[in-house]
Image (cartoon, rainbow, N blue to C red):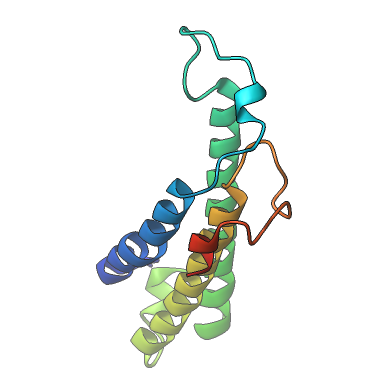
Length: 137
């Protein structure tokens, strides 16, 4: 079954992605940035290890959301996870809506957590967690 409705996708883009993106853009710079040597002109903006980190981050988020969806389908749809079996259930649309809601809420939470983990490639997440006041709005 379809995991998200078009309205949920729009909500994710406008409400959960946009404000954290703006807040990350207002993240204070690191105090030691001027002490670092400039990077060579030939060096790309996004380095290879950064690409790996982003791909792994996206893969982990995808796997977690898919697992949550399968678990919520099994819970709300009487143990059924396939569309053809779910369509046979009484009041299947309501059950499917409950499973989608669980996944949607977990995805919103995951996006908010990811915005905190994306603050820096160099520092751990717990370093100055509340340092960006725009992230708490």
